[in-house]
Image (cartoon, rainbow, N blue to C red; front, side):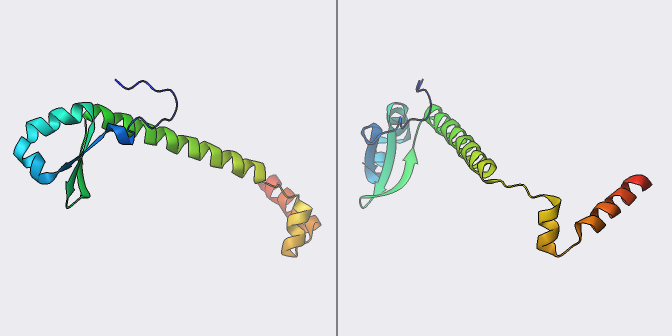
Length: 115
C-alpha cells in the first residue's frame, strides 16, 4: 500500500512502463495486469500513449489525492476570498445607490414593527 503523507507524486516516471500495444497483445491481458500491479503501464501506438493500465490501489490513491488537492485549493481560495472581503456601512451603500440613509432606516423600522 502507498504510504505518503500529504500530497506526493508516487507515480513518478520511473514507475511507468511504456509498452507498444502489439507487445501487450502478444503478452496477453493477464501478463499486462500483472505488470500493472507493480507499475503503471502506458500502452503506446507508434510511440504515442493511447491507454493506461494501472492497479486499482494506485487508482484509488490517485482519486484520493485529487480529492485532497481539490479540498486544499478550495480552502486556500476561501481564505483569499475572506481576506479580500470588505463590508460596507449602510451610509456607504446608500451613497453608491443614491438613496437617503435616513429613509432606508425609517422603512426598516416600519417593516420591523409590522413583523
